[in-house]
Length: 276
Image (cartoon, rainbow, N blue to C red; front, side, top):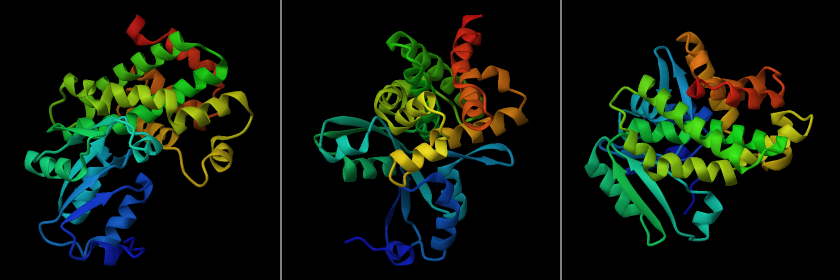
């Protein structure tokens, strides 16, 4: 039974599942914090990040800090309507506590929704946020009329920037093998071919309309995560004087928010440091 009031929904709950746009998580946790049961555990499906005083702040960190609970994450190549239609897919749970990860796996796994549990929770979560930036770039390429070879380059270079960013900013160890899980390259491919970030970015490249106008026209009230995440990433990179090391991420931000021509996106691929 759906319960509209957050206080009623969380009171007495042993397990909390967070699935909201990332910009609202702080306010939601503030409303919940006096009513969360001691010993409750949470799992976040939220794809986004925030900027903290020390740089990167993950959504799971915000939930942990505000509610004082253990938080796992679930990310993967899981386009919602296909999951709802029970078309086979995989997903990844990142759980610092593997016992909690197994609990969530038992609750969520079905014959058509298969889950792997790993301990590198921060890397799993970061994959879910960063892939949306790359998908915006893939949409730009589609809108500009480039082909599959170019999109493959966007995916590869975007993945390289995802790995590099994770190694620089994740608190714990970052294992490259995590990027071979569903949360990594699989989700990146799916989002660059089938997600709404790609679709709206393609329309943006073909029109003179803003991202906000296209969101209103195409998404029925939903918001894109890619442009907003690129803005958060840009702030972090600028503070650390690392803008030049992440040209794809930065180009997406500049095109979405600073008026850089969308046709310039190909320049960031042609001059990417991976080729130097």
